[in-house]
Length: 270
Image (cartoon, rainbow, N blue to C red; front, side):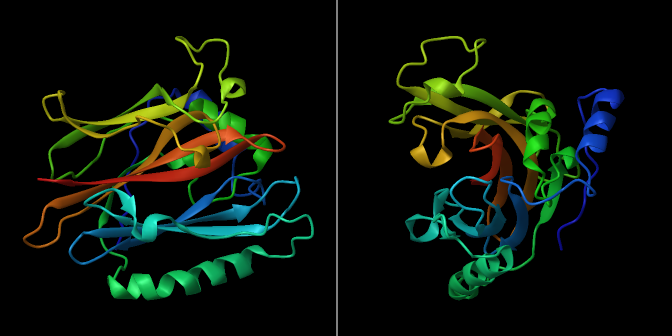
């Protein structure tokens, strides 16, 4: 089972409490901010899956949607080359959230069964103030974006990781992302989009592995405005390398405000 883990935060208490008051279970509602559900790992750790879901904001459609990512942790690539996505972008959309999730689950079921992916592994760190299990109201997402963390410190880690560090970097982009940068962005942004580097640091405080570094930002990320860390998970299968999964929040400009989506970065630690 996935175990809840206490967060080591870097924000002052008044600021954190302000976010808690602004974004709470009482104010969470349908908006273009994904919630997530962890599905789990395969017994050999070679595959990991999770679902993110929500309701599109009030643009052309208010369709319910669901996306299930099934990832090969040895290559950090989607099984089948892409996630399973159910959404109706038409102006006449009638797809409810419940219908979208049911359809995505039905499509994913054969693949999940093939690799015996189930709820196993352990949550080693989380920023609980990302509210990953809630569809945060879109008028609160910008506040969430401002205080989200760029590092996590795993507890009870058996792989020697002391810190997971996120750095935002410029990377190549085929999309015109000029409108996504604010005035404080340094460097030449032409032909670029905001990407990220994910680094693992050991108990001595020194980096020992770059888990991910963007060389190019895919158009599917919709010109990100920022990234932050949400959670990390580990699974150590018998006789196999330990597997780590880091969930990031990706923020971008939507129809009526910020959108939130989740990205999973996976890797095996030898």
